[in-house]
Image (cartoon, rainbow, N blue to C red; front, side, top):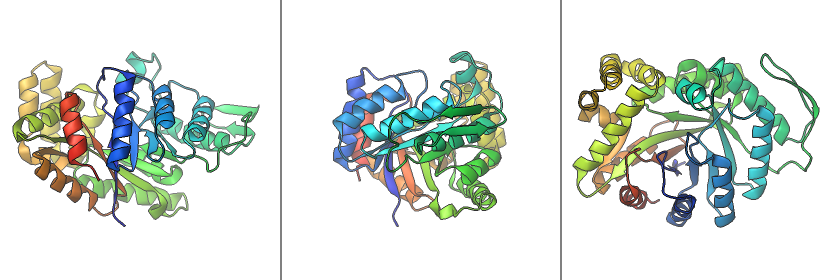
Length: 333
């Protein structure tokens, strides 16, 4: 079966809530299967997706990702159940730990036991959305005596997990309905898919039933160089400026020297050196940037990778509205 084509809404600041929701409507009209909303330090996902659910009819909606620190697991379950009701069955919950920079410096929480928390959140959310009395005795959470005060949604929303490293991807295979992958080359993806299958086997599950969504940073412009510059800046920011998770993920894929150069240069304030460390070959391995024809072809190659169920078209953080719209339209299914 052909891979679905999803859309990740921009992670960078947008001018208004209306601009974001209009993008969801535009994606629905263009034939995208689902839109994913990241929740970082911009507009919250719950309000935004609620408005989007009201303004659309068919396109799937999801979080990629809701972190497992800033809301209690029971509240995340209530939210997932309510968004499933609001969207009439189109919601999919993406969970993950995010990273220490966001969790500690923005939410003021201690970034402890990220994998265990993700597992317990997934299990508690499932119980909440099933309408069960939540009786949970975990390593982190001990809950009892309550259930939803309304009929649970039918069907219950699927619960996905994001993961970069072997153990986090194995966890997704054991406990989640889907895995959200990003910053992976084709070879790197193949390695992590082995972890996913191992996790599924440990959980007694069929790995073919776990939806694999690969996020690919895309920028399609008539002049290819500005498109490549935007994507290169995006990759350098994540590898160099967002802690060590993305650096380590790139290093695991055989690019340890490059990952270290990008990270160290960025941390030292040498943005030019950080960007120049990402050559055209690596750029093409991780992303799709260039003319509309080049980007369309490259995204199709990602969609053809074995084990990929959906490619989520995402945008570089520095892209303005014009570049976002051009890329969205160029990759319209």
